Length: 290
Image 1: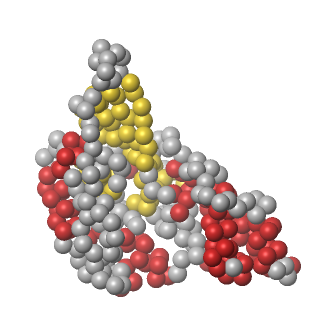
Image 2 (image 1 turned 120 degrees about the horizontal axis):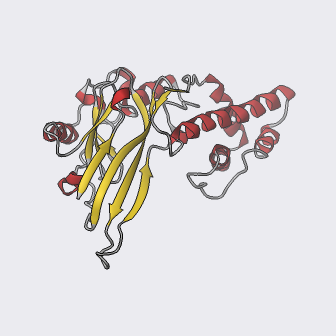
């Protein structure tokens, strides 16, 4: 089986394949830091961050060699397999894409976050210049910025440090070729690079616009003296509530409608409205394509 990598080296984000001489040393350093977390590391409540050696041949190391921090990444894996029952049949090709929850990015879309939260997420939710991550076959980015510097001040999690974790291996039989591609990368300053075939750029910018539309309705309603219930009812005309999370491909307003209705049930109308009004304090980056 062949495993190929297509990165965005020209923009400072590179993929190191398992056949590279650098791979072993980089992998050992990531695993060592997972096994020995520094003070201020976040707790790990599951076992999803141990690197499984059986996945090695279809994994990679991502390194940020740019001068900017990476906030979001969209990966695509193109696979070509030979059907196991009829080996003489023509190969089958398919693609899977994985990426962060772009509509909920705490760094690119910091709506409702305090200064302390922004500092915390600005360290643990990004890839600093010079830092690296293990890219697992299922798209997980494993590792942290302690390979560049330890967390300081509000970047440190309270409540101690967590232990290691693990993830299962995968069956790769009958796979002829796998190509791991970086389809899009968002940097924390709002710049975007990559082919963008999966639409990561639009997902983030549409979510920013959806927040703006809802905030505008809330502020106008407040200026008129409407009650929280009246304002939320107006918001629901463009962001209808839902009983279950919308699909990842649903419009951003549907995702916000679900989140708002969920908070409304838990916290009530007044607190939900205040949360929406707090979005006015969010400072968004200048979203643009390189």
